[in-house]
Amino acid sequence: MPPKPKTELERQYLRTLIIDAARELFVSSGVNAVTMREIAKRIGYSATSIYLHFADKETLLRAICDTDFLSLATSLKNVVLIAHPVDRLHALGRGYAAFALTHPNHYRLMFMTERAPCDPEQSSLQRNSAEQDAYYQLKTVVNDVHQAGYFRADLKDADLIAQTIWAGTHGVCALQISMAEDKWVNWCNISARLQLMQQVMMRGLMKEST
Amino acid sequence: MPPKPKTELERQYLRTLIIDAARELFVSSGVNAVTMREIAKRIGYSATSIYLHFADKETLLRAICDTDFLSLATSLKNVVLIAHPVDRLHALGRGYAAFALTHPNHYRLMFMTERAPCDPEQSSLQRNSAEQDAYYQLKTVVNDVHQAGYFRADLKDADLIAQTIWAGTHGVCALQISMAEDKWVNWCNISARLQLMQQVMMRGLMKEST
DNA sequence: ACTCTTTACTTAACACTGTTAAATTAACAT
DNA sequence: ATGTTAATTTAACAGTGTTAAGTAAAGAGT
Image (cartoon, rainbow over all chains, first blue to last red; front, side):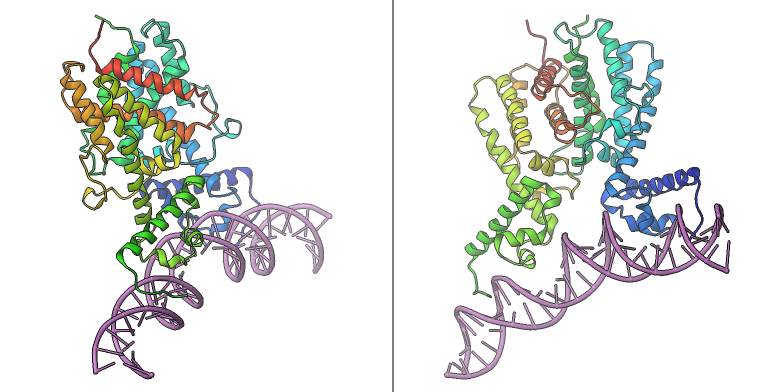
């Protein structure tokens, strides 16, 4: 049943219909379970129709990624309401980890999967936006803590500090996601691991107080 | 050209021939480039012959993994020669990161890829061996440092400490491997990131000295 | 010497994948 | 009524992991 010329809005609608179906599939069964034919079946189209909206599977996955980056940033947006900058940093870490562990498949796709490097030029997201760029959010809070004079005197590069904090949290989450079921290691409780990592980061980066 | 009955030794030889060919392929081109047919072509056999030695591709990859776990442990073996336990811990971290960054494809396969959980029972490696188990090596050194009284008083669980140190180093390496090319983030020098992480870990975990 | 079994291996085939080329069919413009 | 255009589908290609069925060589038994 072949239809009529479509408005831009209708195209947009179909586009998000595809993305949503693809999401749903891969959230529950991982990226390998997502096949073009399966996505198509879900939305009642044929597989080739997807190619009218996305150049290939990689591009489609990237589009999912983009919406996920946005939802990560959105979920972290409220930390700016917290008064004390160090508390903000803590909250950011907890929020980030919560996102990673409640959406492991998304997290894997966003930060752990081999993929063509993201080109900020052609992303739908805005860089250095407090609403859309989680890395910018982190860097902002790091800057706040820095300005407030909490970091050790020898730490001056906000990017370096931010990337180290990120790496620490990412390390705990990533190991949890890909190795938690592995019986070789006697894994401790994930909350304990997260908490100690936060503690270690803070103690390691900040001046010794009291 | 169909051959004759083979001795156990000949079977072993062919097995490692397959593993080596598969390694070579995936070291240079990543796991997706490794196809059964391509491996077979390399060693002059047909694809189905591989199934006489490995149940499926997953099992073959796991076998590669096992040899890589061994080579990681081997590369770290010499740190026991270092006299001071804290220096040992440092060296372990550096050695681990060096392995990760010089063998990114292996590292990805070992620690970042979705796969059926490793069952220690049927691994060819020995757990809790100073020569074959990198996690055991780490835990041993952590215990040494603990016994020498360097860790903060509230830190008592050697597994938790070891897993946190691991996560920190893993975080830096993993982000480097999957995101280094990403232009969204203004990445600092990888050595600087590694060094700061080590520093932060040490400062965060150990008593304040001098 | 001739069979018979076992073993190592290959070819053929299946069911699936992403992707492209070639129809098909509906709506619109003239 | 005709032609054009756009949305969609079916058919097909080249590739994947994997299995079933065949083939040929070596050795054992008589």
